[in-house]
Image (cartoon, rainbow, N blue to C red; front, top):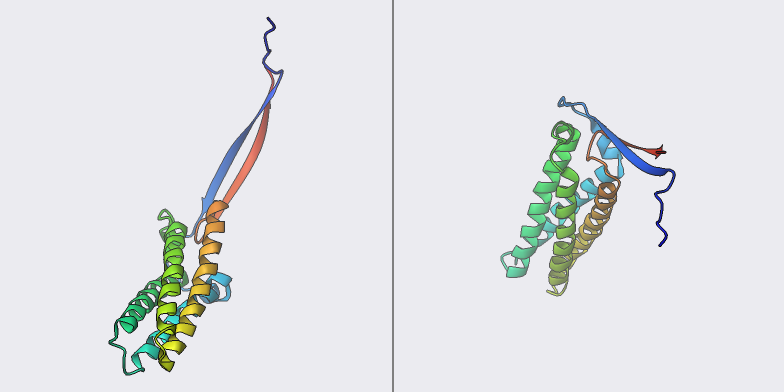
Length: 175
């Protein structure tokens, strides 16, 4: 019987990561110029305009309108609060909370929710409901893109705000 020998050397990889955040609350409007900031503005405006379209219809207390308004208002307030948190760097201050995971989950759920309510509103037939459905579909696309960006950032090991540097060092060991 021949014995397989242990190789003369082997390689291990050591990963180091460091997180750099500034934990002071400060106003920074530059977030609005980034793609996630622009998406949040689109989501907020689309939700608000869709809500106004349903409310201005005169038949807003129909079940379809209530369903659309629920989705639009939750999206409006949640996304508005998140935008405020980013502008004030509260996200960076509380970097231990998995904000990217929270945002990814919300964006994924609200993409599907906006798809559902927009289809329901579009099939009602009233012009104001069709207009609301258009803005709902715009929000669906914006939330879908945002969900994809959050998923990609999660896979790269990023944090929502601040800086995380991940470095890998190969080590070759010989016995």
